Length: 450
Image (cartoon, one colour):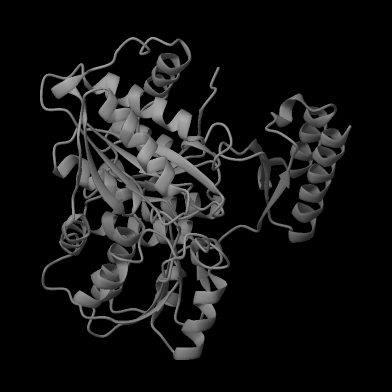
């Protein structure tokens, strides 16, 4: 039974359980306890996004780690995939990201990477929980010269920028591109503009003035309409929107039309297939991806596998069966040949490389896939609940699924990061799927209020 960790690490309102400094310090101690089993130098990287609460969580984590005799490498604000890169590049034992990703500023979270740059599996997270709540670490108190120290790594951004630029062919430049770039006032603000400008693009920036409270606020990958309007206003070639911690990418074409993660995966899969670089001709996506993506992959001569929601589960499937590309409709895109986790800037570079190679605008590339009508709705509940336990819910689901038959899908799931039930209905008839989604949402609301 999980008490701290959810779909993507620990997450919640900062200064309220589980995102308190007390728990953060204990998580730091737990991570340090696990890595001390290793037979080499003990160092853990800590990075964060731009939230106000990042300062207190950072200090608490560092205190916990140092109290177990392990050193800390502080890199400051850096995208989540940048922490994964720095962790492996510096041969650290683990990497910790302080971020609530796409959530509003009052939330925060803790995500953990192992020394190979991959997110910790469920069993390791549960092991940390057990260490915390069983008090197994209480008596372990290194003293004198055995306590750890914290050091700042001042050139982490520069290292990550160089890494990103090297992920596209060296003879490619962005000289002919005008890019509207929205960094969501988040962790990419000090990295992404430099990457695209140094490769030659003209860059119009949005969301690059973080104040600790404006992260993701009406901007970035969650609100790409701001970017899209600016693209149309300026006649730019493409809009690139990142989320607060930089692991998501949503783009828009030169006409201001939003291009989601499914379409980006279709475009990049086709390019990888053409270069015989898509391993086993297989794309790994989640249950949230549109049925149109499956159709597009089949037309290319490839196939698509689905996992449960969460880029970590996409990555686990990729590692388990030797696949090298996958992602989510929400914009987490994992190019395993380059990095170990979803990386918004890296994904944007791969997309731009396809535009250069094909010499086609984004609107033409995005036509590779036709989406089935799909409606997504959220129902906020008083607390986290399993929708399958709600009275009458299962029978209603079966009735609606029977009505759709093979012409659509229904997916209802509890968010792993907040008290929200997510309802997705997909089919050929817009009116039908909207009415079905509304019906399910109303059932959930009534049951939650009873």
